[in-house]
Amino acid sequence: MRRSIARVITVLAVLVGLAVACGDDGDASGDIEATASDFQFDPDTWSVTAGEEFTIDFTNDGSVEHEWAVLTEPIESEDDFAEDIVLLEVEAIPAGESTTEAFTIDEAGTYQVICAIETHFDAGMEGELTVE
Image 1 (cartoon, one colour):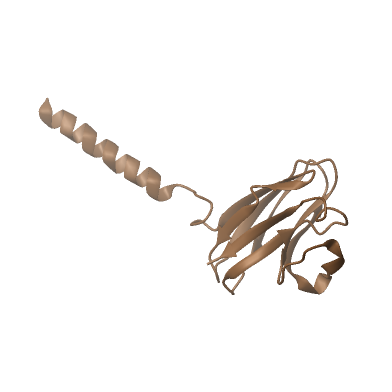
Image 2 (tube, helix red, strand yellow):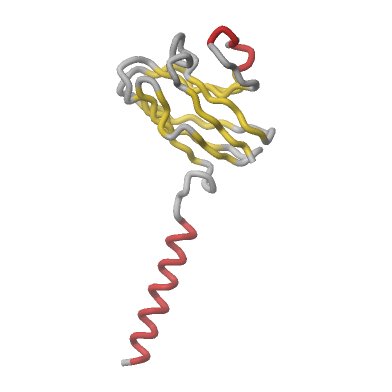
């Protein structure tokens, strides 16, 4: 009986270890998620590994189109925005839709993420992507 309990405990410990090792915390797997609403991202911070491909599952739960754009330099207002500072972006998707796209960023750093649709950044659609 004692040996059976020990086996059960050992098997459970192995299963828990496997579950933890295979779990998806959003960082280690290279997959991140972002949900846009009017007018914010949830979550509004993400982390990926430099030089490794990551996918973003982007969902628009808002009532208008939204984008997810990573900038090469931060801006303070939409007056500072220019297309040439967009490092990568999920182009505008309609309300109620989702998309998955893959990207790679080679240079480590902290990047500003915005919705680049006019008036959305000034309304508060901003986040931060850390590339380690």
